[in-house]
Image 1 (cartoon, rainbow, N blue to C red):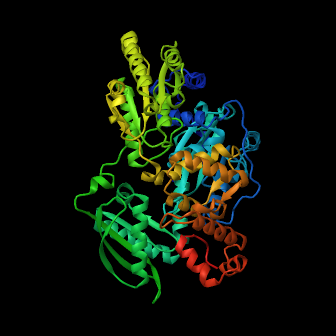
Image 2: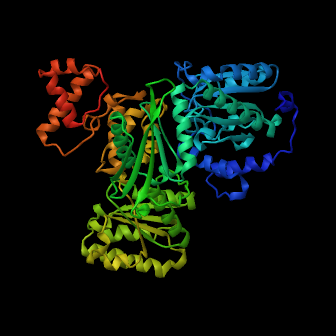
Image 3: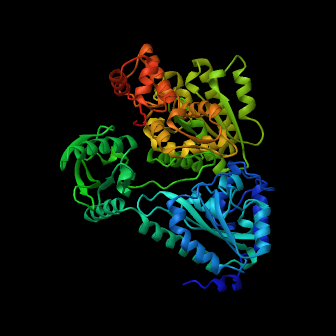
Length: 607
C-alpha cells in the first residue's frame, strides 16, 4: 500500500539535472549523444519526437471539444479514480486519465499552483499529450512504448515541462489486451521519486481489475476457455466470437495476417454448422497446418460464447511462417514496422552500415528501400549528411553530377536509386567512380547504398557495379508484411493531418490490410492522401475509402465490372448501407444487388 503523503515528502537522490539539461540541448543541436548520458527509453523517445518535428520551445497542442467519457474504462475506473483523487486533495499531485491516443479525458489536481501551471502547458481535458504533439512525456511515451514510463525534469522533450515529473501507465483491456487509455500522475520535479511510479502502477492495476469485473459474462467465459487452451499447449491458440479475437504469442509470431483470416474464416464456418472439427489447411504462404476447432458454450443453456482454435504447424514449414525465434525490434528514425520480414531487413542493413560495407537494396518500387537506408543513416550518424541520386533521371551530365555528389566534402551517406535503370555505359561510369572513391578515401569513404528491382543484380550489364556491394538485402513488398499497416497508417495520417485529429477505424484498417498493394507503401500513402482530401478530421470509415478498397477481391475485374462495382459501392454509401434502397437507386432487384455484393466481395454493414 502506497502512502499518499509520503510522495510529496519524498526527497530522493536525483540525477545530475544540470548534466541532463546539457545533454538534451546537445541532442536538440544535433550533436552526438553517448548511450550512457541518458536513459535508453528517453533517448529513443527523443528520436521519435525529432522525427515528429515536435517543437521543443513551445507547447502547441490540438484540442478536441467532444471527449468520449461514456466508456467501460471510465465507468469501471471512476470509483477508484475518485477515491484516489480524494486522497490527493491538498497534495501537489495531479491525477490524469487519457484515451489511447493521449487525449486528456479527466484531470484532478490537489494543489492550486500546480493546477495553474498545468493549465499553462495545456495538460488539461481536451488537449492531446500524445508523443507526436508534445514529445517525450509520461503519457505519450508510455502509450508509445506500451508499458509503465516515468519522465522526470529535463528528460521531457519540451522545455516548458522541465520542472514537472510524470509517471504514466497504459491501461490494457484484461480480455482483449487492447490499449484503452492511460493513467498518469504528475507533480513538481523536486517532489518526484519512486513512490510516484509505484502509485501510478497500483492505480492502473486496480482499474484493470475493475474492468475485468465489469466485463460481460460471455467474454469472461471465452477468456477462461482461451487460458485453459494456452496452458495445455505451447502452440498457436486463438479464441474468437463476433466481437473479439484473442491470440497467443506463438500465433502473433508465426502467422501472417492473411493466414489468420483463413483460419478464422474456416473456424467460423465450422462453428456455424455446430461442428467440432479437425482439418488440415493450406495457408497463403503455401505451408500446411492442422487445425482443431471447438465451440465454447455460454453461461446459459443454448448460448455460445465463441470458439477456441488450436493450430499446429506440419511438414516442417515453420521457417516459411516466419521462424520460431522472434527478431528484436529496432528503432530507425522515420521507419515503422514490426513484422519479422521487415525487422530482418532493418537488422541486415544496420549491420552492413556497422561493418562499413556498401549494400544493395533489392525490391519492388515503393517498398521503402530508400527510407530504410535513410533510417539506418540517421540512427548511426544523425548529424551526418546524406545525398540521394536517382539513376532513372540520369542525363548526359550523369558522370559529372555523380562525381560532384560522391566526392563532395562532408558527405557521410550516398543513396543511388534504381541503378537497374542505367544503360551499360552509365553503369560502367558509376562502377569506375565507386572504385575511385574506394581508392581515394579508403575506410573514410561515405557509406553507399544502391537500390534496384528484384533479381536485377544478375543483369550482366551491372556485374562490374555489383562487385562493389558484397551484400544484397531483399526488401519485402507490403503484401508480405501487411500487419505493418497497423503502424504505417497512423504514421501517414499524422503527416497528412498535422493537428492529429484524423484516425482510421478498425473496420477501414481491416479492409486496407486485405488489399494486395501492387504499388506497396507508396501506393498506401497515395490512397490515404486521397482520403484525407475529403476527410480532414475525425475517423476514417470504410465508406471513406476508394471503392476498390471497400471490397475483398476474389479475382481481377475487367473495366466494366470495376465500374459496376464502384457504382454499387457509391449507392450503398448514399443509402447508408441499406441494400434495398441501394438497389432501388441502381434500378436493379434486391436479389441482383445481393448477388453482386457477394460476387465483388463488397464489404458493408447489414441492414
